[in-house]
Image (cartoon, rainbow, N blue to C red):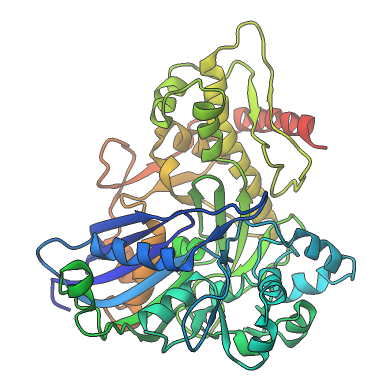
Length: 513
């Protein structure tokens, strides 16, 4: 490939779209970003306008380019998962706003289905739990609440998709209706054993097969971008050459981040630190069944052979720091927490359990609520701030412990990404409390990079994962050089680690129930 060639990556998230240009050495050479609105029509309901998602994507692509337009050789897509759209195949117009993964409107529907005793069958076939989080009940809700929708669906006039499928449809001018294994595996309709839509599940959720997209591995030539003549020139005043570019990689955001971190072998894991934390452990061709409240899901695959992963979520991570800033207002911005936490030797016995919306894996207690424990007359603002940062690492350690136990694997390194990884104190404490190395890459846009990697391997831009690994920046133990991968190694002994973890477990026990 010529040195000027680039992969265009679209990372379509919950609040905005990020775009990247990635060169042949795996470097991000340009980045664009555009936000879009969130809609809350009723308490617990969350919606997006599909047209605004598309418009933000176009604007984020446009933001990449100044005077010179590079040679774009392929396009990859990563996306917010589970968010559900249904549109008319003929007009291309959605019949209802996108129902976002966070939306809880179908919780009662899930409760009703649970009483039918189907939860175990769902878990075996999909690796998931019966919850409004996933797409199936969202699809049923739209079909049942939009006039004439069910009849249209039965006639084959409607198309369902998660956000990747919607963007693919738009990028190909309505020519392609497809998705990948990772996104299909988050619908509660896709059998991760047979890699196909499951007739029994379709019947349970009353979803007609006519609306479903075709499903392919994540690295695949899904179609080619097709824009009518002079679209970019007329819209943005630039001649951006996307017409005919292959769309060659698609993955849900967390699986894309796992691939972007090149966690492609069993036992490799990543943790994304955002509003919450999303941990994924590659288990290879082994579908691990778990009783720890973890999810079994499909990871990115380069061919039709499935790759499985365990996934666990921490509900409140970066959101706890936001609470320090906006809730109790003891910090002005998140960046100051690192110096404050590092300025004291410990928390003085203070523990923060940020169970603002309950506790996730491995506790799964929806009734748990947050608490600050261990306060004395000597406790200060700094102790609470440090304890809040430590709580993010403790919660992640709980999930890692459950994953390793269920998978029967050892983990000697955790690769990390997301905004909170810029906090060196948090990363060092995470290494201390896990007792393993924590590796922060120089480029933390792992989700977008994962989509680019998939597309690039598909078209031969890179020969294989090993070539991408060779481009990964060399490791250093110094956090000062941001151009290199930083490795944080444990600095406390096993006795101290176990003592801290035991104290954390006692704190959690105080808020459960």
